[in-house]
Image (cartoon, rainbow, N blue to C red):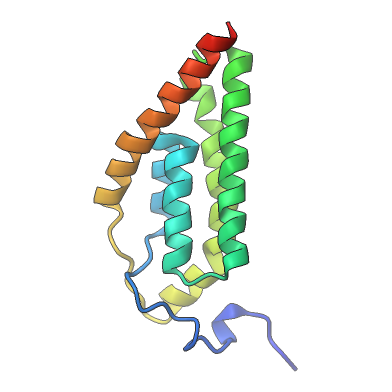
Length: 145
C-alpha cells in the first residue's frame, strides 16, 4: 500500500536548506492590499522556499498571471474606479496559489517548522509592486478611453 500524502513521503532530498517559508495566510494580505503582481511575487518566492517542484512553481506563477490579466480586464469593464471590486481577483488568485502550496506547507508545520516573518517583504511588495500594478492598469484604462 502506497500513500500519496506528502506528510508520509520521504523529504530529506526535498527539504530546502534556504530560508523558512512564510505563512500562507500572510500571503493573502499581500494579495489583497498589493494586488496580483505583489501577491504572485510573494507566492512564487514562498513556493521556492517550500522546495516545491518546478512544475508547481510555474503553476503558482500562471495563476498569478491569469489573476493579473483578469484584474486588467475587470478594470477596463468597470473603468478602473472600483478599487474594492478589483481586490476580489487577487484574492481569488491567492486562494489558488495557496492551494498549490498547502500540502508542502502542512508537512513543514507538522514537522515542527517555524515560519519566517513576511512583514518587511510583504510591505515592500505591497508598496512597490502594488503601486506599479495600479499605475500600469490606470494607464491602460486611460489609453483605452
